Amino acid sequence: MKFETLPQEFLQAREIIERLQEAGFEAYFVGGSVRDALLGRTIHDVDIATSAYPAEVKSIFSRTIDVGIEHGTVLVLTKSGDYEVTTFRTESTYTDFRRPDHVDFVRELREDLKRRDFTINALACNLSGEIIDLFDGLLDLKKRQIRAVGEARARFNEDALRIMRALRFSATLGFEIEAATAVAMADRAPLLTKISIERIFIELDKLLLADGWQAALRQLTESGAWRYLPDFEAVSVAKISADFRFENSAQAWAWLSLQLTQLNLRKWKLSNAQIKAIEKIHAAYKLENYQLSDVYQLGLHACTLADALKKAQNSPVSRSKPAALDRQLQIHAPSELAIKGADLIVLGFEPGPKLGQLLKKIEHKIVMNTLKNTKKEILDYVKTQG
Ligand code: ATP
Ligand code: MG
Image (cartoon, rainbow, N blue to C red):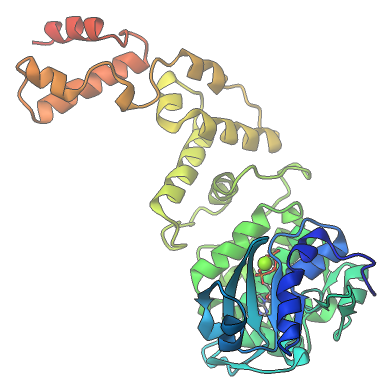
């Protein structure tokens, strides 16, 4: 297999490979970009693998950044873009089932491709557009299947995150997981408890946002791997319309939190901002109806995302339209109040909890449209409050 012309994204980076070759090293495009180019999908990161050691890479290019030098990765800055250039490497003895104890830099492409997770991710491409396919990745691309490089059980033993990655690629590419690979996934799934929750989150999040998320969740259930994810149950996608796709991560996790009664987002190490966004959609979903104050507190977007979930699950949305309520709101945040605490202090109010309560009351009345958000109206109201 050969590209007649290299994809544009590769052409832009050709200078890097040329320079490495002129210095006597081998260099190739590798990994996800080769896979995506062959599938005609959008290419995001063009990764380059080379026989040059990191110090050698740095001596060849004038502008580089050490982004992961202990793993052999140097970021090379060029006029046409920044590219990660990684030395061919092997990874040895995963005693903790998480990360390789150390990586060894090697001079052979084969060794580097051998340590990669799936055959479709173990393809390399040279400057002439020829595909180097040592593990029948091209055949698997054609069969639209995900298959481990080498012995599947051993590969998941080395790094159980690959179980989540297999499910994630099945969701993003719409591929099947090859039978022996699927058996090994189910067998090695208990090792997922050794993997950091942040890394699992990244894969599950990508899975949920992909076109094929429902099929992938069914496979998560079938493989039994869900048992080794914190707070998980076997998630059913039976009730949600088959073509529904999540608009963003918060909506996906809100849906998940509605399925998994035990789900504790702190355990999944999400940020406060992420948790807040998810909880708002969850709360909006649970409401019988929207009041002005709900739309004010949760925000229009959270309400719309919750309504989309309801609709996708065919539960009748007989609630007021949040957009209509949102248009009636005079303010969308406390900062938009026509009066500040300081204004009231100038008028002789004592700073303290009482003043805070008064401001809250003003805010509520303005949200409920029983008070106008102008300095004059608010001051008139304040005078009636003693
Ligand atoms: P994406 O399009 O999502 O970036 P990708 O294939 O580029 O997909 P990355 O996670 O960016 O995936 O990894 C780049 C490459 O590194 C993969 O294609 C694969 O060859 C290799 N790789 C990444 N993670 C692992 C892993 N856990 N085990 C083995 N190889 C891996
Ligand atoms: Mg990538």
